[in-house]
Length: 305
Image 1: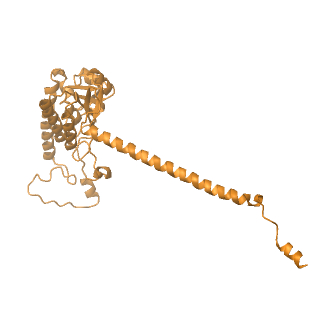
Image 2 (image 1 turned 180 degrees about the horizontal axis):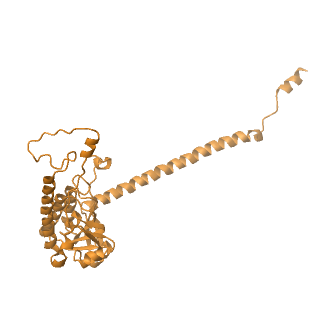
């Protein structure tokens, strides 16, 4: 009787088939870890490859910006002039002069191309860029060609007057040879809310063009005199550069501040031809370009001065 109980307590023996689910679970667990390890390794390699690509690109950009010759063919140094030409902007005189200096000091460059897509800017900033290009042309002897994209107007057209030849694609806007002063007047708002503005100045003209004060006739006369004087300088620059191409009977239209599409601009003598950037390169036998990039700081990225 005792032996029978002992035999009953031994239970059913465990077979390999009983362990199969546990073995499969263990195999799946090991397999999943292997797959995860392989995936992790692939991710690491992908990140490393990305870092290498970015690093190589950065090195190439540094070479390009600093005028290192990466090609054996004839090339031109291209300086992009994008957006409004204003102080502290991405297209300020200081930034562009820095870029132009690199372009002109590249001893292997065949020419300098001004790649313009700008509505213009302040007279002073535009003139400083214009004059610097003239000075560097005289110093280096490099030819300069200006090409438009969408717009080459106002101060941007003044900058283009430093070039030996000026081109634009068919649908570009060219011209706007003129100067303006613009502001807003808020004196009505002060009256509406019964607010009194109190100003103390050291002279009667110190508060000219104050937007919170009513417009004064003498301020308008002063502003008109200023824009007329600046306009005369602008016109003299255009005549000095385009004098052989523009006709005196068109002066009233040309210097009215109006602008035209490329075909009209060509007929008026404001440009030398209707060509895209690629066509300009072909025209002058330029095989490659060296793009001069602006130096961008962290404050530029964050939008701070």
